[in-house]
Length: 610
Image (tube, rainbow, N blue to C red; front, side):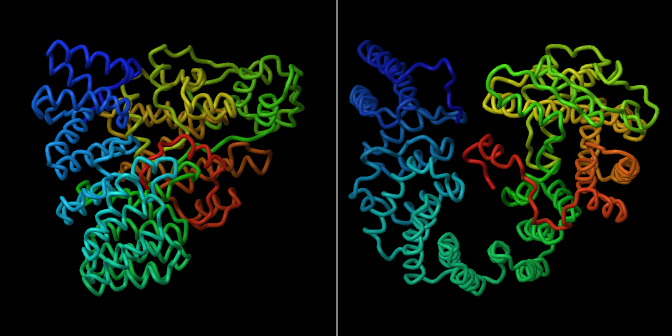
């Protein structure tokens, strides 16, 4: 249902005025259109419902004024729901309100008197009420973020009224419990689910009770209820996965994996078990091979029974698996100092060694006039490419770096501003999103690496511009390199332009662009098993080179490249061990180096699914 609104939409008052005018002229269809639009703007406003009542009286309650075609307007759906309720068909009206809530969970579609009236449930079949509540539950996350719960409370009132009328209806009690749990009424959820199980013991009832106990922090009771669900139906392997997830949440990974192994022994291809197994095994040992195998499974089984979030959950906030790794170093320390300093004090930086050209250029652009003194240029000279290359991004005048490529086209700058983001669900999702850059010219993609456009005037752009401009530059570079993966995809990988250019960037001047191009190669390996040996070999050689240089001088990109290695499919054990050594992190999946985790939480949508 397209919402039919944009920034130029009329206000509810304006829509009502037009509706009244059309109604006075007898133009019922135009009046209906404006009433529907007013409902989208103000779904609970009494004047809107008064106008709808007048329209119903004038038309004899004509439902055809609010059609339900394939592309129904959400305002028309809600208006039709209210007309159905007024015509004595509240169950059909609730079905439509539930559909509207599924489309836009944050709107208060149900905050009207007829939905919360205590006498309504007596007019409804309790099983249908339960199905409507289940439809609401399926449309929202579990739990619903606190600030988005109020629009769902009318449905909870409906659930409470229905339970009062039908106190022994097990399905209704369970569905009511599921809704209560999602909006934070955990004690009520436990009470209703327990009553449902007592009224009619069943697998579904025990599952609802187990979820309610789990939300209440009563893990032992949750596991007992889910265990009873398995006894009701030993073939429902989704419950095995639920038990495993509950055990894992309390740190009991070995027991969790035992349950997953039991499920996989029954059906090695059962999607919930496979997803959970790979996630838990990664959580146990941190080996990215589990996540790569999970991505392969998802690619090879596109018709899974429902959407899974295990891969995204495992990658979230992890360097390169789910986000750009923030850069560090004295130049960026000076940049952050300048952004927080009051007044116009001039900032001077004395460097013991030369920083990456992207870092130098970013700070010079963000803080014009900054005084930078480089004490020495250590060997191996960071201004020289690590291998011979024909793709020169930077030129040096002493220790000052300048772009060696022309500015990209305005169209390319606009395109990257629309796509670049510091976080992604997982590497295959980043690859898919970057397809929007497929039509850019090679010269533009390379130009973006050294001429990043300004951050967009969005919430994300304002945060990055105000708090860490360097992160925006890294975003642009990462997405430009992902765009290179979509360049001339008809060319076989081994001799392709995209591979050749990315390799030249990998072995070019030690820079943030080295990391961005390596991430593009890693992403290619995630989405195409055929290129994995090649990418693993390149990564092993590049990391070995980083380690060799690091024995002579500091390598600012060393830790990040090591994290990239740990994200690389089919990496050999010796290189993996070297990567762990360079990161200084334990080889487990429990550590979450998420310096920007709070930023991701703020910038991602409130109804993000897990």
